[in-house]
Length: 419
Image 1: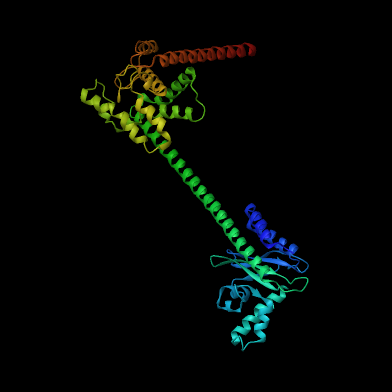
Image 2 (image 1 turned 180 degrees about the vertical axis):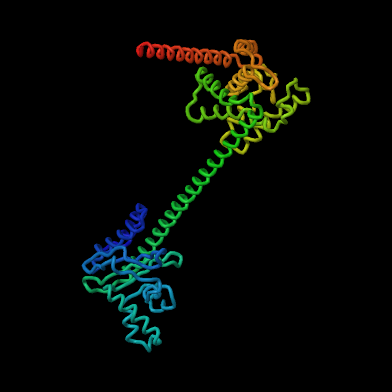
């Protein structure tokens, strides 16, 4: 004899463990077939995508070939639970084969018309074809999620009210668990779709920002190409800046290195908004013109604002005309208030500007430019950056010289052997 309250308690505990509703329903089917000693126990489950009900499991001596039987939403059995045919039930929506057969035997007493007779016969024929005795629906807020199919008792006794009540409670709890599992799966699927959409937005945003960066780089080059004499300035400043940063021992891996390179390339992009009459002026700028020239820093910042991943780059560009002693612009920062990357841009930009020929001047000798940097270290320029730059420049010049000498030696040696 089954202790039904204890069985329900244990079943409830088992339901909590199962995340896959199909596995839970199979557990229920196995439990019923084993403990109640039926010819078989089976479970029909609704497939909302295919809009039909399929058997997911069947246990017992007279088990059903689950993969062969599928019924549509308009099947007589389904309509008997959802439509006007509910009057065929014997209380609490449970469908008994025996009760349906009694109704057919007493048509006049049960006030059955011809349509009712036809419908009941169809339901009876199907229930008999699957060798069932009782069908118990699994409802959740009026939605028929499945049907628990019970075969006949092997002892040929009728189901008691306690047993039917047990099966109904089990079906109701199972329906709730199934729906909760569906909600979880829907939530997981929605989260997956959301993640995919966010990833796609991120990808498009990255592509858009990369495109914008290339436009900014083209603008920076256009600024320099306004004067043929400045050709190659960006490339030179980038190389000088990177080797200075390496000499300082800065971490240039990953994003940090990319940030410095972007700042070196784009530091003067704001000059695209400065009139050529000021940019190319051969004479000394007037006070009014100098005010306009200084605006190129904030113009550059404004241009780069759409690049949300360039916050650090933008800050470097904003600070690359600040002086170590606080006399620079636009904010009058000093000392360590100035990002070290901005201090590097300031030094290498000034150096290359001094040694390069312009429309309004000839390039200064290397010694003059280096002396200017040293004389203004601690004033305009960060002293440690100046020292690192000079060391890096000399080391690279030494390497270049040695490579030339060694290369000439190899050529001479090859010529000597050839003779």
